[in-house]
Amino acid sequence: MSYLDSDKTLRNLKKKGFVESAKKNKDHIFLEFYHEGKLVSHTKISHNGDDIRDTLIKVMSTQCKLEKSQFMDLANCPLSKEAYLKILEDNKMLD
Image 1: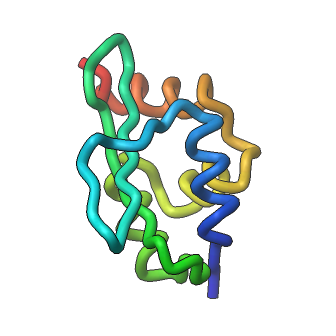
Image 2: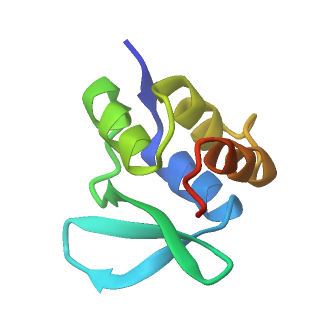
């Protein structure tokens, strides 16, 4: 079973270019990823600080247009912002 530390995931996604959305609620932090001024992907992380488990990792990976293993690499840092953009470009997600 996979899991991600939610605080580390939030920090690392921000390092990769995700920004906190203007959309707010008391339960989640909404993150958006823009490329050339266009919203490309989005996800959210709970405020509760609990580890992110398999089910939510899969949901977040889908929201970010990645396979689960790719999202794990994005959240843990082996996958750079440039590599993320290359995956999106290769999959025709930046058009």
